[in-house]
Image (cartoon, rainbow, N blue to C red):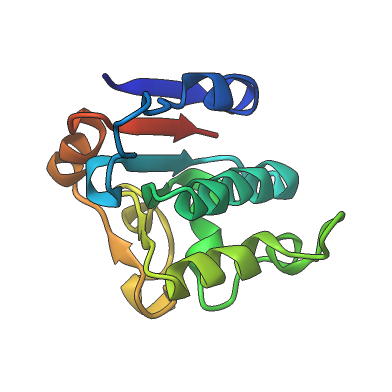
Length: 152
């Protein structure tokens, strides 16, 4: 079963949608629980919430992957905009900082295929380890069996 959740639905429905194993069953292993976070918003609070939920899913054994498009792609730059670096409450974490932390924890982070061709710079401006997604690869991610897609 695939789930597509918008930012609002993700915050409201994600816990209700999570499958809970019945007695005698074990929880699915991480590779059986893929999740794609698609982040397009340029709003720092929205960016941080998307990444906080992605971090929470990682802690629950989900295998997240992050696709950054439009203004959110700027989070993946070696020199992100000031808003992306500003710590937000309640934990004093910035969107760019949390993205770097997720990447360090093995979460695959990519910009969409349209991001770089529409900027005055190339892949050299991206942080090390950030890739450029291809549409067929992302289509495979969101159509995978059991995939959950969060969109912000």
